[in-house]
Image (cartoon, rainbow, N blue to C red):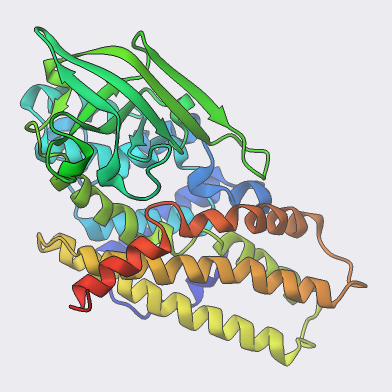
Length: 388
């Protein structure tokens, strides 16, 4: 199963990750054999709990978490390798994605001993899937404008409000919801907290949202007087903004902000090799060269951001930059391939390629929305450069 990533690797990772990369490649060759490109194009939107269980059986969920919780106690470089290979191959990783990428690390850093002991082993065993409860109707990308509220009571908290665009919320066991626990919306970042919400609790309603592709990986959540115990609070009351900021660094800087269209690109290149041979047009060669150059640069930027995470830093601006440029790259791939396909209407196209192109073209507008809109990210970058 070859791909563009196999042809170069300019940005250096620790040599110890090479052995691990080979193990991951061998695993994927075994478990993804025969999977068509249009299915693999879904990758980190493709929900397959059985596949997540197979990764867990190899010890590859919660890779950076301590072994006492079921993790592998490896560093972020190893996780970069794992994620990169999974996405480059188009593995269906959505089931465990959020729990592995941010919910588990969040609970490990901010949670209580009881929360760590309960949730982390389940995350590592693919027995607890999480979704993100941040976005809300009428709030756009302004997370500080959340209106969902947790009110303290005698025995815990009462939760009321709505969340939207929660990926795979209707398939997950838990969400970590950012809510206002004190003050008003005018207080902005103050008074925000995060709570672990069991989605099977009375008063929780989850409604799938069908997108343009016909998939239902988004959902809307409604909380109607949901009773939460005191131990649902993550960290301390009012710490929510700090927690969310830390989460978004991991969400914005990883390989998933580079490889969303890579299966399509690889499938198109494969079709060109078989259909055109040595008769490639100059514009085909130029496009592939440009994509390869952009991928190499973005990968180097993402690894540099990972190195800052390994060093214990919180590279907010760097992560925003990777996400902004990376999603533009991801959107350019289907747009360019659509152009080439349209310019050659007499060509006999491979149906698998066309299905993959149709899916990625329809879903591509979301690439610059999820994880923070382009406008929000560029505002962050401008502030980081002292321009705002």
